[in-house]
Length: 330
Image (tube, rainbow, N blue to C red; front, side, top):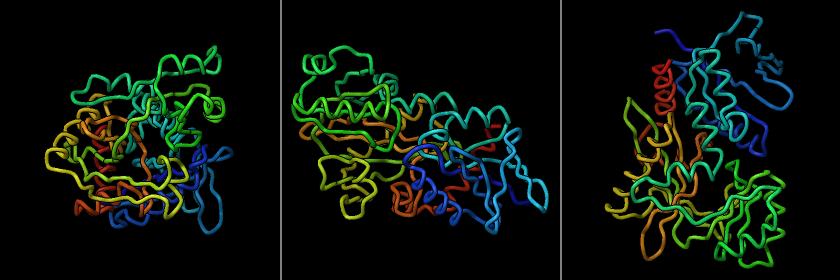
């Protein structure tokens, strides 16, 4: 069987650029070299390029081909591992659709929808046994936002940019006096923000993927942080957060969670791998949806690789299956 040329697309336009490069490093290391020739394509605000022996080779954006001294490389598939724009918000997916190049993630519509937290909540709202925190969506031109929040929501609150998944610009607000600073912080990242009531409970994250035509749900990870909430610093600073995989959950809890996340995957028309973050509320054990991440981090210590190891699934095999699944969809 001839090797397939895979474009491992990393970088992006957001603050998670370096996180994406770490994801690509792990994916490149784990993919089976007997099956795939992997070319790491870096996308930044200036160029799309491949580096070989310290020499940069730009991608021909007309057909996403790579012109090397040894010949022209055309790609059988793209493995997108960009967190944020343009790899998680549908832009690259639309580009690859036009060129009929398969890719490992969900399609343009789902990617664009799930980057917007408020829109996503409105779609998954009717999934059985799934709850969403009471919230408001605010815009930069919303009049008297602080009054609107105080009149409609109960403190404490989470305030966060509506688009993006890195927790940048996010704040926990305990009373009205903290609103102004938190609103300004969120609006610095996005023109649309989400204000949600705080749900007291245990926080979890769970990966799932379409493998061999079936949705495979991985073991959940419980996230215990010494910070007030799981923000960007808590995600990426060693020692602040303890991640327990597999999480200590009862069989009943696991069965309920598996059904809910499977239904969310179907309702949002997901493809490839995703990660869903949620809270199990204290006392009730109700499942509260936080968000879905359609290009989750893939460094060796990231949550999905942790969950794959806990499930006894070879990480490289898993990445290969995502590629093979994408090839079926063309």
